[in-house]
Image 1 (cartoon, rainbow, N blue to C red):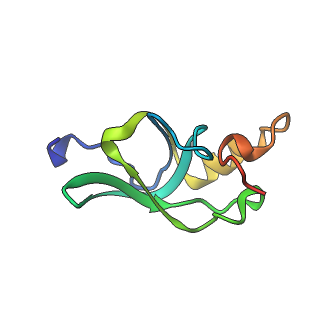
Image 2 (cartoon, rainbow, N blue to C red):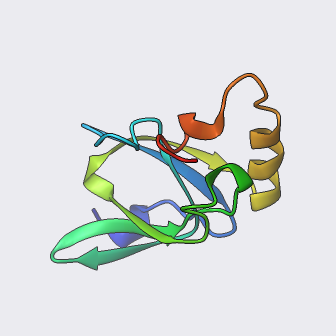
Length: 102
């Protein structure tokens, strides 16, 4: 895929859903500061897990998703938008974003 056709996630928080998700990430992986890099001949979306009290154990860690395994993604306008929307999820634990968190 040509670099000019890649989405611009600058200033956004993105939740990625990948095909054949391993246990623990089947409900998506949220990242901020996302950029694309080629590693070992494969394109990855690389970023940082947003800070979340419910998922302290992974907050602010670097993460990467192979772009060719992404089947769906959600784009939040800003970290503030992401936090505001997450805060509205009262009926479910945030484990739906990070299985095994907490």
